[in-house]
Length: 116
Image (cartoon, rainbow, N blue to C red; front, side, top):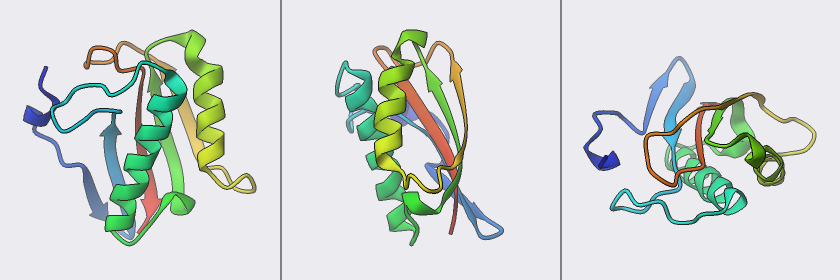
């Protein structure tokens, strides 16, 4: 599947919030850039932060995260990389689910809601 052909917006604003669509660790060609869960999580959250900063926000303003992992055994590595990206005094609310992802080799997908 070519992720670039999917009819979605990377984000939408509404009522003082920014809603980011699910983000993956992919390059401009829709190819997954790494095989490790920690690296993929860092890339995804870095991409989320970049998109939020383009809209005048950042990861410190995130209030809700939904994460999908393709493998249950990756949770510890994901959780470690995730914790490093956020302020320890105020983690966002989060749901984490294990599910097959649409893009081959994708280990994590993250969507979030942030204050604009």
